[in-house]
Every structure is written in C-alpha cells, then in structure tokens.
Length: 99
Image (cartoon, rainbow, N blue to C red; front, side):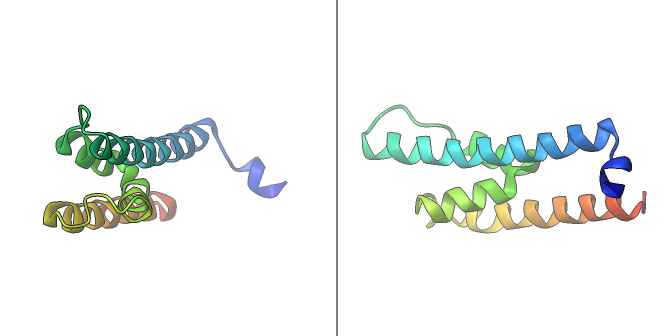
C-alpha cells in the first residue's frame, strides 16, 4: 500500500497517457499495414512518426517490428529510436526529480 499512498492524480494521468499513446501508435501501424496490403487509403508517414514524438515510441517500434511495417524506411529506423531515447530521458528525469 505504500506505493499507492504516494501516487497522485497527475502521476495516474501521465501513466494513462503514455499507455494510451503507445497502444494507439501500435494500432495505427497495424491499420496502415493492413491498408497497404489492400491498396487502400493510407495513414501518412508524418502521422506515424508523430506518434513516436508524442510519447508512443515503444508502441511505434513494436508496430514496426510486429507488423514488419516501415522496416526499410531509414527515417523510421532512426527517428523512432531517437524519440524513445528522448522520452526515456524525460521520464527518467521526472522520476528522479531532476527538473
């Protein structure tokens, strides 16, 4: 119970946001892969990359690997891990209160 006693509403909102944006990113990569296979209207590369920028880097990476989608695009192979690293640093600093 000690951990729950120290969790405030802003922590819960932050955790919910990170979970939501990562699940959304993963789902969008899956939708785009399916649409590409069916020659349908696609989700823009910009939108997919913005998912990583907004905190969904892990979900994006899992979508890339899990759906074997955008694997040959250098900007996805480089930028998604960069945004994962940036968000990891930001979250790490928030956890240890370095801001």
